[in-house]
Length: 247
Ligand SMILES: C[S@@+](CC[C@H](N)C(=O)[O-])C[C@H]1O[C@@H](n2cnc3c(N)ncnc32)[C@H](O)[C@@H]1O
Image 1 (tube, helix red, strand yellow):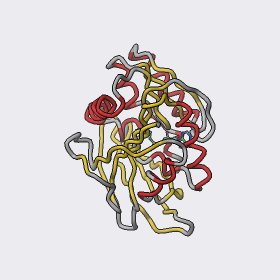
Image 2 (cartoon, protein in one colour):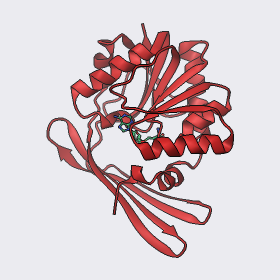
Image 3 (cartoon, rainbow, N blue to C red):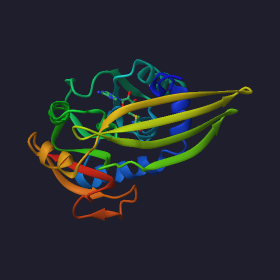
């Protein structure tokens, strides 16, 4: 057993089924809320499943990730596909780049920022990275609770990955214990990758009041990757995609 992010190939198979719907959504939301967008930044880009799709559509794309394995895999995959993507190995609470029209983070990546201090540092860096009027789009899970779980299976090139994700229990200080288990079947062998780690139990205020202190004002909320699924305010619980605009 070992960490999922140290084995990017299996992560990429498990999560990589079809990023076009997410990419379509980000394109539409950028256009709707930030106007003309050319330079795009992904925080916690992982294996680049969405970033590479956006680069194919002509955006200048930069991704950053703290995991050397994920960052390397993303850069190699983009090279192999002949898609121009810049990948930086960096912490999303401590980076210094600027001039972006739009930024985004996917699948609740922000929940890796366990303390208010980390989330504030993150918002401060993102705010400085964006031009005025640029947007930060955050795909987050609000107030996840024990019992929340999903299971699915994907196959690529003869490798099958069965994924099980669940919230195991609530932890003190606004955290939950998440478990992600990948069961890999490859060339007649089967093995398991397991990540069991605390994550931040994101609240609506984490996506509105906190970023507001760094000049990132909420301008729209969506409940899914359907741009028609826009709501006036965030739900108390469940998936939400927040659009914050840099004032
Ligand atoms: C849930 S995965 C999402 C990956 C990718 N965005 C996707 O949609 O498939 C979260 C990613 O965030 C990265 N990550 C976690 N904490 C980070 C941090 N402090 N700075 C940068 N990247 C981080 C992990 O290494 C991992 O690749």
